[in-house]
Image (cartoon, rainbow, N blue to C red):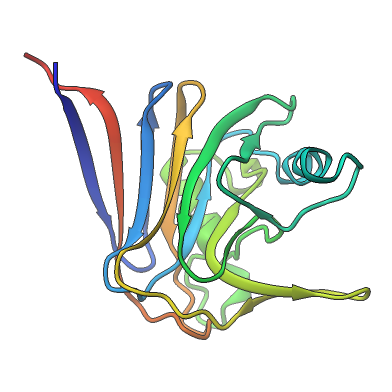
Length: 197
């Protein structure tokens, strides 16, 4: 059986959900270098993920700001659900921000939390974690400053491998004020599926 890839285009200000079987990968690409977004799955626990990655890197209960290739995203029980296997872009895969929601915007457009909760078919309050990608940040002893300027290029991407069967959601962020972003599409590619013979 040969491998069959599924490719889905995600328009600016929208989100999709995708079912991943254990071992399958999802690659999220900005085809023209314009758009960033958010990623989540039911039960994603940002706080536990930050802490577990801090222990992994430093051997202490420190918190890290971003996931890197080789890192996992964890659920609320501390079980690894997805492994990041590639990140090729300016900025980072941020695990600090909760994603925006409609009250953030003067025009009340749906934020990534709204989009992802709708794509997953769960209440917005059920979104327990978000990973924002292609964003930059700085931090000091007083504040974490995210959503700084980025310089994206055509084909920039990040990639995850499912460590168990899981439904994931990807949004193409509706924000138009992040330096370096413009309204554009994202492409999500799921690979590792066997084609029917």
